[in-house]
Image (cartoon, rainbow, N blue to C red):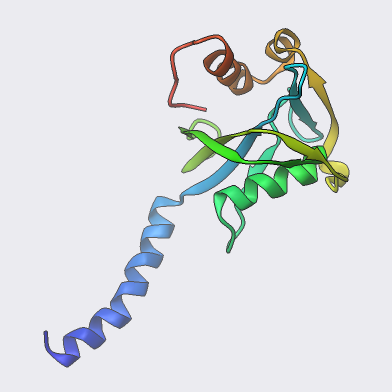
Length: 156
């Protein structure tokens, strides 16, 4: 490869990557399934949308998805998760164009101070039955898959 061609790649590659980000518009979010010793599941209710959800939110620039999952669990629900296992990656295109949600499950947790402010209206521990009753449609689907053997659905 000649030197001018190498220089051209150095100029063109960032432009191609930028165009790809604009054209694809991928958005990445995380959610965390946290259960306690009684088998209850932790859910949060946001001030800006209906239903109860697993703690979570967007992955910020410069952080990994796992770091985002830990940060969101601490901020929204006052739980510092232990080891995290990736459960799946789900398409959320129906709600947000280009959105994907990574779902993690925490092996355990340590209580900590929440810093969610007005974003979280409330949070609480729910039996699986109550969580399935009050949870958002996506929360109900994931609960069915994780705890009742329902077939996996690739859509959030």
